[in-house]
Length: 293
Image (cartoon, rainbow, N blue to C red; front, side, top):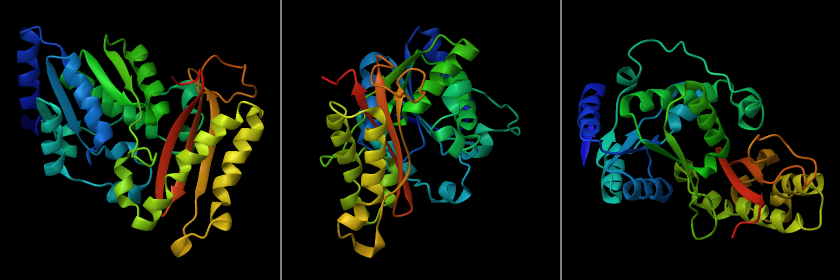
């Protein structure tokens, strides 16, 4: 695997691949690679001639400077992991290399950015779109791979592709979970051992919510999830003052991302959640309809 830190070196390699009519798979990441990322790389390896993995902590998508400062950076280990999963190129630029000029572009995505993450992280999705557009321009991929844990982000990228009219195939990939159900995330490494032991209860609660949806209405299921997690520390003895602090749980149309009021409001329905635990913000997604096979 080759590792590039400059856009010039990356562009030269991409131009060579394009001249040879090779297909290119792009896996954008912010590093701290885990099995979820590696599953994207392996799929890209199966479906493309050349696999590019970007490793770049994008400052303009963070609206919390402390969160940006604490985001894990493990470049050497990331490159080794990417290579083992089949990547051909790792692109790990500096902020100055990625953004040689001040960023002035602002993207708007209408209703899909006005729910869930959008109001709580102002400017986040525009920052995501800017970096993804930059990566698309640099790598000219045939396909781009994203994990479904960031469900709203996938909808944003799909809308971005419609806006810029790039003929890139967006490939959503299933969430990869630890054996205990916790969705894999780079942020998990910031959890204390005690918090890591408790965190799988987020997914366990979502699984119960899907079971409840068979006989309860949407509002009841939504309220039950929020109440169950908010009071979890009262019902269970947790160490060191640990507690779940849900930021939101929304049950939404899986295409428009708008909240539904009835299970028949949309053919596809997912539940999206954000929860604080031990000072770490965790997100997860679960499908209600159609039922997963």
